[in-house]
Length: 195
Image (cartoon, rainbow, N blue to C red; front, side, top):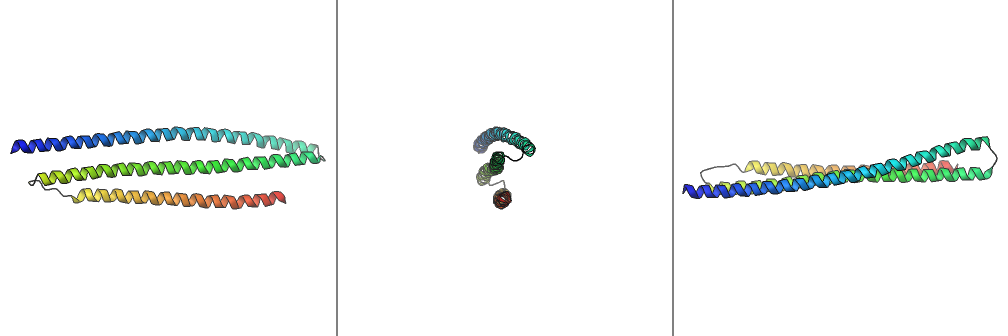
């Protein structure tokens, strides 16, 4: 009788070890994907900074051309060229702002997805542990375990998942509001330019 109990405990312990190994492997995969995303984001930031530097150079050239135009007034062609350069710089600034907004949204979305994935992996792990606890309790009638504790843990993870989804929706709403505000201010800039 004692030998049978020891065998069943050894088998349940080895299944517990297998579950722990699979959870560790999934955690490693999540870390690896997060590192890859971080490298991509770093490259995007470098490209964004390079574009900003180019825009600053063009703005400096525009300022220099404005000063030279003040010295050499009267040429209508130079005014047209200046307006063209100004409009090109404004277009490039708009593109940079849009790229920056997209990059921020992409980074925040990736972080939220990573958080959701980690919550899901924890839910899987806790579900496996709950099954393990229930099966152990049913095999050993002498030992009484309270199965309410794992249910409360799963409930807490469900709550965390819902909070994460709520935060993601709020960030998306704020981004949309900001984009509409930018669109409204840009139309005002165009009216000012025409005046």
